[in-house]
Length: 338
Image 1 (cartoon, one colour):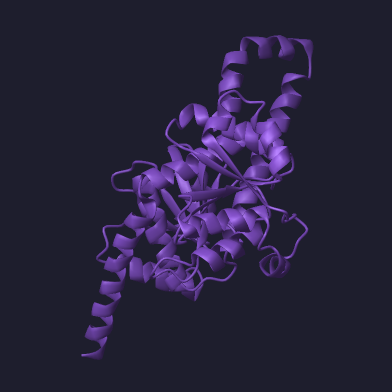
Image 2 (cartoon, rainbow, N blue to C red):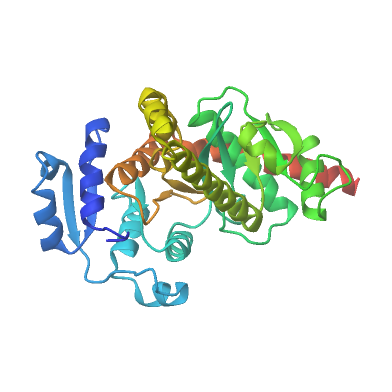
């Protein structure tokens, strides 16, 4: 029931996702009568959808504490509970981000060795695609959090982006070792000396994100959120200037007609719906956040992201690497004691 155009957008998105996910069934939570009427409008969707009625809805204006305290019968909480109970393999929501993160962390808990989950997404770069985390879940991070994000992001790049040996970089105000705060510098030291199979690049700067210098960009939630929103704003500004230039004269309009195939390709490359679906990585369950303002195509992509994480056994891979990290930390502690 979450999202600007929900639940119509959600049901239409499931119909689109069904075309790609032939072996996936959907549990849909919300107003039973309304949802069943919408599902009936899409041929064949009822065969793969089960509706569970929820009397309450978490709105975007609800505070996190209120959602946790009073939202047990909300569509969001019941969907998360279904993952905890094993009725569902993952949850996708376009609702209140803060409430979704708090509820998911409270119900699903974090994986062993993970103190805080991180919000991650895939962004386009000059070299292809890069995963970036954290994007707002954790404003303040210590070195341990950043190292954990590096492990999670590296596993994601290997399992989901299909990169054999993804490179990992720490976002910093410069590439020199002396620059940055203590948490970033300590995280760099740990990753440089780690026995984990991680290709650690070192420090990267803001312009390295779009250049695709590394496959995994690691940062704290405050910096990551600002960087992401700045990139989104820049892309919108570029599109605005391009449209303005192409409509500035009859000659430019005629040229735009000749460039139409290239412009369509350009538009598709920057279509935010293709990258919709921010993942809450580090939870003991799959949880994907769709942008609240997306349409059916964007929501279908978020569903496909969740399905891919489940198919790849993403959390099992994270557990394996975290066990190695914990063992390494124990060995370092013993050596220091000796």
